[in-house]
Image 1 (spheres, rainbow, N blue to C red):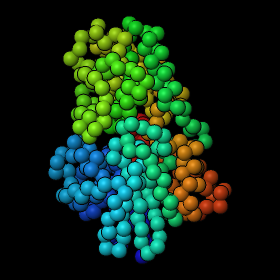
Image 2: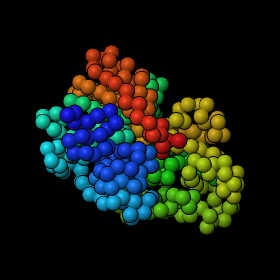
Image 3: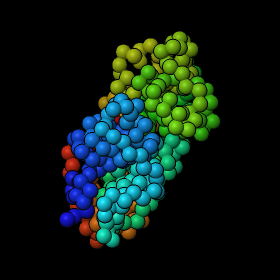
Image 4: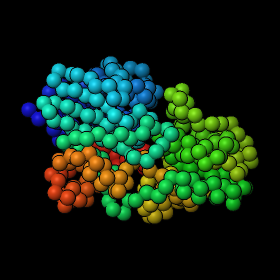
Length: 330
């Protein structure tokens, strides 16, 4: 019996990793909706991920929850399960499975860059690595986030009569952009769309300081000039944005390196800030784990599979249906 199959089913313990449909037992890597769904019977996840799921879906979104802290092995029958930080968003985890001398790691979504709003990525040696490939093409080599924030702050200084409206996904990306602004010394109030308020509050409750945050709708239009407003990407062209003073439309996403995507959205200031590993990080992680077998999922699978085979590794695409191409990046 194989420890893990190509649907991320762990047969010896009858459990799935990030199943795309409700299952009796699920191990959830993180709280984004294409990985964490409501309706499972039993959920194993980090305490932060469980808190995120309950905030998004309600207290009874699963039959039961079992929290597992990072680095604490859990023996389930003859399989040992350990979660390690993935660095993607708050609570995001890699899953290490150990069974009869075999070590299998599913990275979930991950990044290796430092981030105050997520526990830092930890490398986990293994025999089989299941890796994401959202940005699995050589063209995707992300710039330093601090440089993107510096561009944003220069634009804010250059346009004191305009608001800067940043499209950022409500879970993970919005909190990271806020944190990057605070790290850069920006201590002015940051104004939020209502859809971001609860998750930002949850981050604060979980120990992540985000500074002075205020609801945008409770502020006079004229008072938002020269300030930063963050909203879901869908709000950039929505009627909601019309109450802002001549907004500079910005988008924080790894996909902003694709100029056509920025143009399609009418983005004036694209910010290439990603919560996924870029091409270089993907290659480095594959090499660092020492894995001889690589499975590639949810992303640009073929290019990374080709690269791995060129390195003499056994590699296959999984082609699992139901994952978005980086939900929080869209």
